[in-house]
Structures are given as structure tokens and as C-alpha cells.
Length: 51
Image (spheres, rainbow, N blue to C red):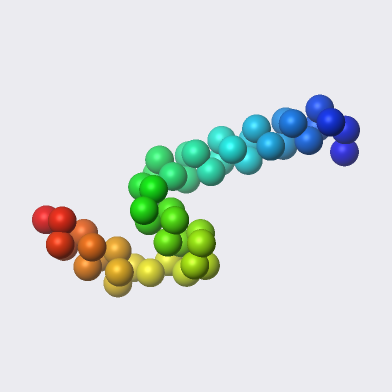
């Protein structure tokens, strides 16, 4: 992979992560990506507390 291709790939990856964070919210994104599971019970509880 050339340096240009690597730079293009990194830019696409950054955009994809940015879009995912915008879509689900930063806290939810951190939980799902860092811990490897989509903890819906946790998110539901957290959303109820906020309401």
C-alpha cells in the first residue's frame, strides 16, 4: 500500500468513526467499541435516569 493509499484509508476510517459517534452518541460508542458488547440494558437504564 502506498503512502497515498494509506492516507486515504486513514481518512476514510476517521470519517467512519466520526459518523458512528454522531449516530449513537459518544458515551454509547465508547461502551460498544471499548468493551466489545452492545450493553442495551445499561443504555436503557442510563436513558431512563436522564428522563
